[in-house]
Image (cartoon, rainbow, N blue to C red; front, side, top):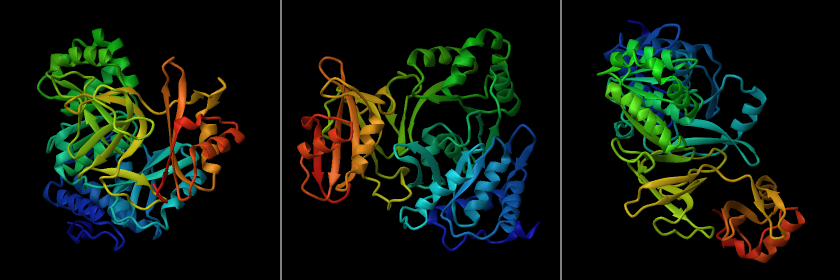
Length: 442
């Protein structure tokens, strides 16, 4: 056995406790089940022993760095997981990025995280494009070594997950890591075709799979040609997970197809800044139950909670689950309410129905002009006394999209003053649609 296998699994001194837990768990898996396939890609199968040894060698070849966030080019191969484990061994947190990403943009973004202390024990970062450019978000909260989240989304200890969506997507990378830490196998494929997908599931004995929205449509369009393959997947494939953005009717069609293998279909609402919600097997695919530790609410433009059945901006907090925050800002408590700009309704039991994903791009000004939300964001960002803001576009009683603004400030701003400022920056907004909170920080 090599020195890498017998050495004590210690991450760098700067590593968060969560990173240390991840490193220790991977080492235990390499020692206790060294010949178990950890990653199966289109080229070969990589065992847990190979994964650990390669990551250990990867660190030895790298120049030491004090960067907290380290980009990892996300390709559908074991090399991506090896590189991520190498980052954890070095005490940093990996940020999977598209393999085509340009280094100068990535470097500029990750510098945001260098001078901020993160007490929330982060373990993963992701790059998000939003107003103001690219932002790095770091995820902390409950460690991925905890089985609770994995159990909730249907991953099994020692199971096999088939992933055909890109690894730079936060939900996909997180799933891969959680399945591996669960002692299971991750199957990665570079391209998707319905027949190859089902053949791979049969060949590898995958019991859990995730499909992107476009892949769901591709599979439905080819379902007649898959009939002969479906019986071979019976008894293995148990769960197919799809984005909650897929129309419920299409999820229903997919469920009818996969039912021939005994697999159930689950819709997953995963937001960039918080763990989300899942549909329950056998229940309505449009009704989503919050994941363990997640608390959801919907609020009106002024930030007041809406009644059951009334659409509002979705906000979430967490008692123990993973949460994410901007890397250039200090950690926020898990109980802090945060939003991704999505719209939905909650029923009496707290189940979520999505109405719209992400924020609108345009709104109608008081003088009936169409204004870009990006222009309004730039205007608010240019105000020296506004520390942060949220823009919420909702239809009025006539169905016209109107912008509602919530701003946080450290001075005595008034809605009228904010409206005047926006008007001078070519983004008029009605004062009655502006809410000002004077707290000094959001």
